[in-house]
Length: 134
Image 1 (cartoon, helix red, strand yellow):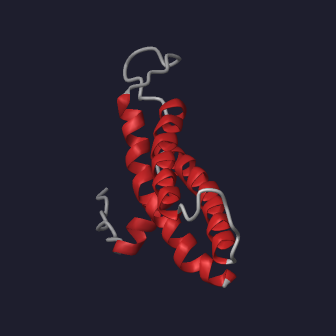
Image 2 (image 1 turned 180 degrees about the vertical axis):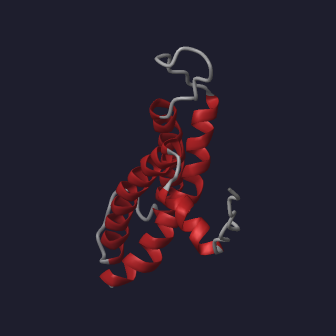
C-alpha cells in the first residue's frame, strides 16, 4: 500500500508569530512579567508626582522629574535582574532534576527583558496616560 504524503502547509508570518507568542517559554514570561510589574508600579508613582507638580504642589526638593526617571530606570533594571535571577532557574541538563542552578545568565535575561519594558511603560505612562489627566 502506497502512502500519500501531503506537502506541509506554509504558515503566514503572523501565524508563526502568534504561535510563538502563545507558546512562549516560561522563563521568558517570568522575566517579562517581573519587570512589567515593577515598571507599572513605579510609573504610577511617577505619574502621581508629575501630576502633583503640574497642578502647583510645592514638594520638598523642587522639580526632580529627571532624577525620578533616572531612579525609575535604575530600579526597574536592578529589580528585574534580581527577581529574574531568583525566579528563573537554569536548565538542569542531564543531572538530577531536583537541583536548581542559578547563574549570571538568569540575571542577564532579566536585565535584557527590563530594558525595553522600562522604556515602553514610561512612554505609555507619559505620552498616553498623562494627557488624560490634563
